Amino acid sequence: MASTSVIAHGHDDPLTRAIMPPAGESAEERASRTQEEALARQRSHEIDEQLKKGHKDKKELVKILLLGQAESGKSTTLKNMKLVYAKESFSKERAYWKPIIHFNILKHVLLIIRLLEEAIEAQPEDDASRSSTPAEEESALLSREGFTTEHRILCMQLKPLIDLEASMRKQLLQHRELRNGEEIFVQSHFAWAKHFYSGQHRSQQQRLSKGDALRTEMGTVLNASCRNITALWSDPKVRKLLDEQALRLEHEAGFFLDELERVTELNYEPTDLDVCKARLRTVGVTETHFRVSSMLSQVDWIVYDVGGARTQRATWKPYFDDANAIVFLAPLSGFNQKLEEEPRINRLEDSLLLWRDISSSPLLTSVHLILFLNKVDLLQKKLEQGIEFGSYFKHYAGGNDVEAVCKYMKKKFVAVYKDAQTKITTATTHAKSSPPPRLVRIFLTSVLDIQSTAQIIVQVQNSILSDALNRTDLL
Image 1 (tube, rainbow, N blue to C red):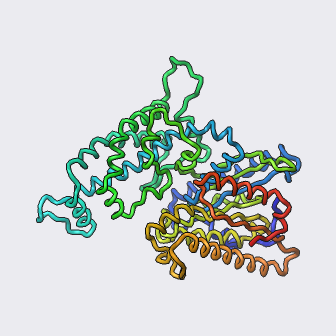
Image 2 (tube, rainbow, N blue to C red):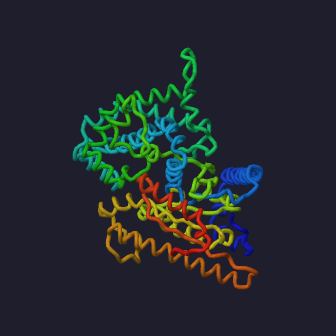
Image 3 (cartoon, rainbow, N blue to C red):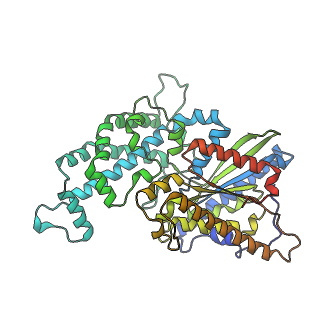
């Protein structure tokens, strides 16, 4: 297990600073954060106590943290781990994701309808009524170029989806409230599946639960609406509107509009890939146990998927104790995006800063680091569509192809790590003992490629379980 560093730490530790509470938080936000931190400390303590009772030899346990910003692919990576180490359990859970996949479709369809209705309403009746602002003029131009009565009728025919989406939100939130513009989420300890499946062995006379009825209704309505949704999504004028708004829904998590006919069939059953693609935001910490077999022994892994939003990073610290490895996910496709919670900050720059803080933290000098430069498939799509990487990273002078960009970003992350290690070595010069050399493994990943990801996970397993982990620097 990871040993405790001899370096003193406090606010001078870069990671401690990075996960400190955000400046200017409201009293309500502070109260919510304080409660989450207390729950995290309590949960971490409870886990440690359980481990002490269940395992006399702590070397039999491997504790792994999945870290990274929100939407970096942590939850999808955990799903891939389940596919490798708990395939039977994963297969049994697949059906539970059907309402979530349908909810993902609803969200994207309603977003399109809202934009389309706004564009239609902006259409002037005559020249004198033309809009005055640039945005309204642009919308009006699109309307004059082709939005017709058929588009209005299509929106009206899909209006029942609004109430259905609202019911689904209510079922998932379970009396919680969202801040304005906040994405719907579930608590990590909330067994959301139970609110849609009341049980497989209930009596035929027993009334379906509200969640069961909602799940069934959603499947039926989407099946009946499939033709209209397809017409909406495939309409050239609608696609042009989305392009003008810089909205690439196919780049977002939970995108299924290109597979509507299959996923809205009444007898539809999600595949492994469907489950990995499904988007459901979680807050808090998800704890998953695996029994990992190697050639020599069986080892229990405990994997923690912690919330990556800036407001949730304060809950990370209790889980650093006795951690063996951190799998850090940095989505390369975020090079042209901003953080949802901090729109001034580039997402890829934020990943670099967070990687720097983790690499240079005295809290983690004995923790082995695994870096997933993730979403390479999505990065490639963006580059092929003509989005210039160099427009967002001014010092980049390479070509606008995935191989060149990945090579550049790998060098940047390696340079950040090596600089952090130099600072740690300098700081420990006068300490009683220096931290042992640690392994850093870097992988280019597309976690929706479940076959390749499975191979990478096995490589990660072999690294963590081998003696080479404590002695070799593969950078």
